[in-house]
Amino acid sequence: MTAGTSSVRNEQEELLWLALRMTPQLGTRRSVDLVERFGSPGAIFQMEARELEGAGLSASVARSIEAGSAIEEALEQQRLMRATGTEILTYYDDRYPSLLRQIYDPPLLLFTRGRLELLAEPCVAVVGTRRPSPYGTNVADRFGRELAKAGLTIVSGLARGIDTAAHTAALAVQGNTIAVLGCGVDVTYPAENKKLAAQIQREGLVLSEYPLRTPGYPQNFPVRNRIVSGLSYGVLIVEGAQYSGSAITARVALDQGREVFAIPGNITSKQSWGPNLLIRQGARLVQEPSDVLCDLPLEARRNLQLRGPQRLLDEETTHPLQSLRAQVIVAIPYDNPISIDELANQLGSNGMANFSDLISILFELELDGQIRQLAGKTYTRVWH
Image (cartoon, rainbow, N blue to C red; front, side):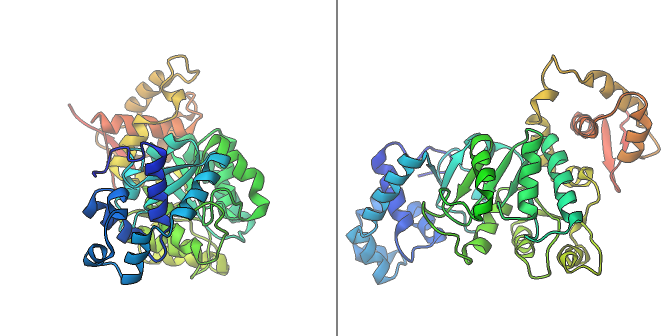
């Protein structure tokens, strides 16, 4: 079986995938290895215990698979999926996010509710403390709104505090957001976010690697953080203590080769210790949403340009982008680099009121080879 093919063709195949996921003491990495070796869950459940032991499984796990001990649980999961409108994506499904597939231990299954197409969109994670200061909440709201308006899907964990602010901000501007849970997608944790979770299920996407009815056990949340960062091109840390969950997410993101962005904070506040320490260790200090947009990998910026907000592609848009594009080109000199802030100030009197329009136009011009980004997020025009 190869990645990029739709692997669940009928209820029987779905049941076997669920049974593999529900097998006790069989981790995600080993599950994927077994499918790679034997070709499908169906083939795995046809193996004798000695053959499975030969593939590296313990005797107890091999016997459990041979006996099909997880089938009853899988049947119950299937029933719950039908009752709750939940869908699963396997590691081999063509809709499984490609970035997530690249991490060391990608989930075998994703339980999902909502808009699956968001998994193909460029994402950035916004995470932080559950007990933010007013400063942290305001920053999460501002960055969530501006990054969503620029076309990024905001990924977070639906926790109270910074996560809640980021999800809410994206929804407020009709942007896209994905909530990654440390419990089943039919369980709301914390309970106070029940309305927000329901809204994300309608307008965004809720997903989890945990089966339905799984409670929010404390040990689940650090594990799910690898999915938050794995889905994303970069992770923005707003506030958090030195050993907080957001700090764990940042370390996982670095291990996965993702960009880590950090909002600097008051040095006397414990909530700033996490991001300030990350900055000392090499995370990118950001002060404006444009800092995140400009420092995303080239692949992300190209995807952002291709998948940007529909308002930028609609011929009937009220934004005179063609005119603004011409103004931006003229305003960028050939021999004297100009910053985004200087451009915004210079063009402000000419109708450049929306900062995300400027970012989008700069992306497009750079991809077209008409301008070049230099150090310090400055730009020059390219001679042709």
